[in-house]
Every structure is written in C-alpha cells, then in structure tokens.
Image 1 (tube, rainbow, N blue to C red):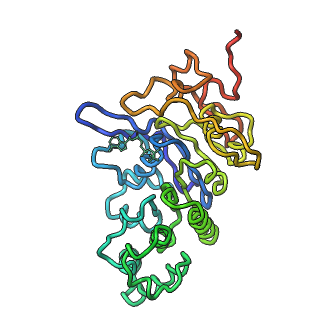
Image 2 (image 1 turned 60 degrees about the horizontal axis):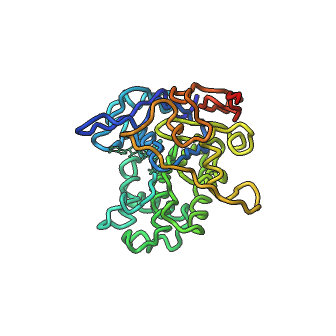
Length: 327
Ligand SMILES: Nc1ncnc2c1ncn2[C@@H]1O[C@H](COP(=O)(O)OP(=O)(O)OP(=O)(O)O)[C@@H](O)[C@H]1O
C-alpha cells in the first residue's frame, strides 16, 4: 500500500470575482521509503497540492473533489483530533523560509521541546534531553548552548537545520519538503539536501521534495512528477524522466533551460519562451500549449495519459515527440 495516495484532487481558490482552479485532477502516490520529487515552474501547483494534504490551505482555498489517503486512511474524512495527531507526528512538512515557522520570541529549545511534549508522552526533562539529540541529528554543534538561543542567532542554513530537526523529532513516516533550500546559497543547499537524504535513509522515511530545480530532483529523487498549470504533465522514475527519449515538451523545455546535469559538456541554455499562465487565464486543454513549439489545434483538448512503462506516464497528444502533422 502506498504511504500517501492522492486521487483526482481538485483544489480551488474562491475570490470575490471567480473560482480559480489551482489543482485539476491530480492523482499521485508516494511509496514507503521513496523520495518523490515534484518539479515545475513557479505557480504550477506543487505547494498547493501538498498544502491540500496537510490541510493548511489559505483561508480561501477549498478542496472541491478527490481523495487523500495516508496509509489507506482518508485525510479528508478523519476528525480534527486524529488529524492533529497525525500531522507533525507521522507526516511533517518543512518550508522554504524557516522564519515563518519559528517564533522569534521563543528559544530554539522551546520550539523542539514543544513538538516533543505535544506528540510524545514525555516529561520536560526528557524532552530537553531529546531536543539535544535532535540538534545532534541535524549536525548542529554545541547543542546545550544552542537550545537556549533564539532563531535570529542562527544563520539561514542553521535555521533550516532546526526546522528539519523539528520535522524529524517524532520520526515521521513521511516528510514533505517544500523548496527547503531555495533561500540558501549553493554550498549550504547541498549540505541540507545531504542531511535530508541521510535521515531519509536512516529512518526509512518517505520524502516528497518540492522544487523548481531539476538538478535537485536529479540528485535526490527516485521518482519525479512534473507539474504545470495545476496538472501533472509527466511522471516517471528518475532515469525515465532524464534518460528516456520520450519526454513531455514541457519536461524537455525545463531541461534545456538549466545547466546540463548529466554531463559536464557546456551547452547553451534555452529559456522557456513566454510566461506561465495565471489561474485567471488558463487555456482550455493542455495548459502548456500556448508556450509549446509542438502545439496544434488538438491541444485545445486536455490529452489523456500515454503509458511508456508501468511507471512512466506522459500527458501530451504527441507523447514521444512524434508529430502527426504530415506537412
Ligand atoms: N490564496 C490564494 N488565492 C488565489 N490563488 C492562489 C492562492 N494561493 C496560491 N494561489 C495560486 O495557486 C497556483 C498554484 O500555486 P503554488 O504555490 O502551488 O505553486 P508552486 O508550483 O508551488 O509555485 P511556487 O514555487 O512559486 O510556490 C498559483 O497560480 C498561485 O497564484
């Protein structure tokens, strides 16, 4: 059984003027112990998908249809108490900017101990001991002193380590990491990703890693989902996404727009023409069609799924790159 399963999710935002459909018929599975990457440009719906799972949508967000199952149990149907017990315990989430999740007036020790006290039956002194271990796990030296310090006394990278520590404190089965390193410089970024990978391996935890950075998913993930305009464009094992000749035109465009990952050869980067659509002006059919060099009239209808293997799916009328245009 997958640890997380999303079926036909439809999430929208209600504004004064209209309903904006941010997630449209998204289905995905996260298997135990795997690292699943969700990649796509800004606005493609990566965060909203996972915020729907966590039940932390902005106040104008609604899940209109679909099902979200954690170990087979519906997260949309369980009561608030059971959900609170599950979130922060079995499922944890970390975000790009740790400062938004840390209270500047409370010490780092307070934050970690609070999570331990809330979810485990431990007394204060045990929570303090465990909090020290948490800082050790995320490789923050001088734990005893660090626990007494405030978030602003930590660098950005160290704050992100604290967040990871808080997320891992209760040994969750699933960690959702939403752009965990985007705000950090490259060296710190790779240290943080290495730390997530190490803990994932040691705890046998599943990870969903949300990023706009293909090189991050290449280095970290077993399986990859490419999203655009609130829809899944392509899904496959890492090697199917990177090495297979069959690719969605959007995946191809994403790959051409970043430095070469698979070899050292210098190549010219090709930015993706045009801009991602806003929810107000999503086209009918394939959302990528207005920017796609292969688009034709048929792309005004949303393509179905083309299967290249049990694990590799593409949603494009020209999956495989072959145009049906005879001219
Ligand atoms: N409260 C809101 N009201 C209206 N639209 C929203 C709201 N929150 C998000 N959206 C829209 O939902 C769409 C999906 O946003 P989402 O944050 O999931 O994108 P993303 O792929 O995670 O991009 P980013 O990396 O920039 O976060 C975007 O078009 C965004 O503008």
